[in-house]
Length: 168
Image 1 (spheres, helix red, strand yellow):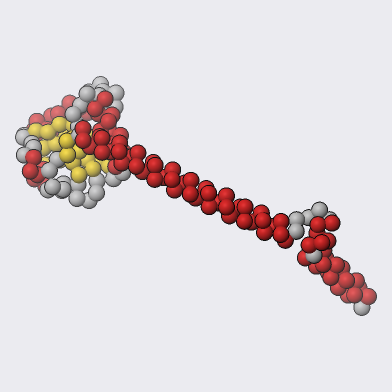
Image 2 (cartoon, one colour):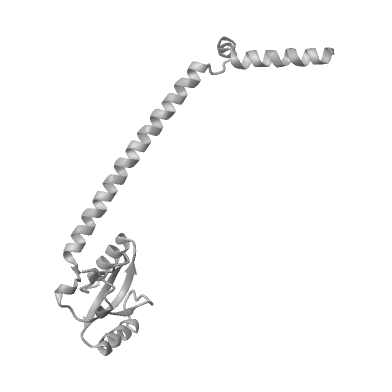
């Protein structure tokens, strides 16, 4: 019985020490007001970080949009009304627009005249040349694959505009 009383007394003292602000301040521990102030400061810092992150994301998106607009103005975008050649040698197919733009700029630096073809499924494909004859298109594809160019993707293919996979 004495043991239970000692344990209960010890528990009551422990509870009083951890919950009493006056006692906590005397022991050098943070009081409930200080803890609340720290929480408010952390919430303010988190809100400021979210605000800064949203501004940075908006700036990044707007810069990417401007770069894409500049690049797309320089690139030819195929539509069925342009009367282009039927067979295109495709050097890349991308779902992410930034990857498409990176490929277009890389080809322009290599002195190609790339053409962007937007597909209905959301992919953008990059053509390096086009032909009226399928044999010429495949010959150019093979010539490019066997060339000593700095970069030659292995998945080059020929797209027939009559498949109508592209948007208008």
